[in-house]
Length: 284
Image 1 (cartoon, helix red, strand yellow):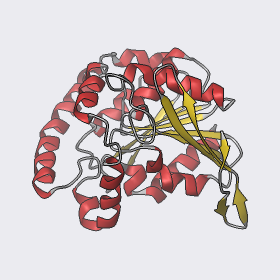
Image 2 (tube, helix red, strand yellow; image 1 turned 60 degrees about the horizontal axis):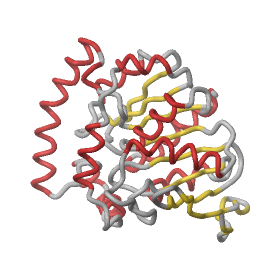
Image 3 (cartoon, helix red, strand yellow; image 1 turned 90 degrees about the vertical axis):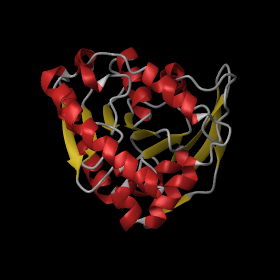
């Protein structure tokens, strides 16, 4: 791990480090900013370690913020045959060990939920807290009971219409129509970050992700880690109406919905997302 230029915070500066974690078939890039209790942020399919700029800037004065690029996402290496989501949890375990993080809080967005939930199931008690933003990871949201299935079906009809309208206008589905209308610069930045991973076949990876989304919701009951589910009210990618039903399966979970947000509330409504996350951290 190499020292980097310190990160300016109000009244001073925070330490900053960056490096590459060597895995058997690739290197995983990471950055560490700030000091204090550890927060590990895992991005979605449309991002990389840069995606969390609005969270690192907010939490670095009080926390050790760890961001990384999943295997295949720039500037991490792409392993032969492309990345397999089944390797994500092991990568996270290796990163936590490498950085000697003690009971970190994990925050996963969309694809990052595969990483966090898989890790939580495989390593009970290792996380102090788990935040699932617009994701159920490997848990199939259609297997969330009769009420959850009904909510999923209703959402699916609206989602299809929203995706079609967005595609016709060149809107990134992970941001949504409102963000494109009200925050065009932020929408442009999201797309620019998405396009940095030039060597990655995201269509193939998306297919692998859904092939790995096959666990029943009942598995969530195994996770005793305090968990926060965060969804955007206008999400057309993840079925936000199902999240309360999934949270209800867990012994220590709650759900917060962020209004006027699509699939990426952390990126679209950072002030609200950061406030929700800060409140959750106080509860731990």
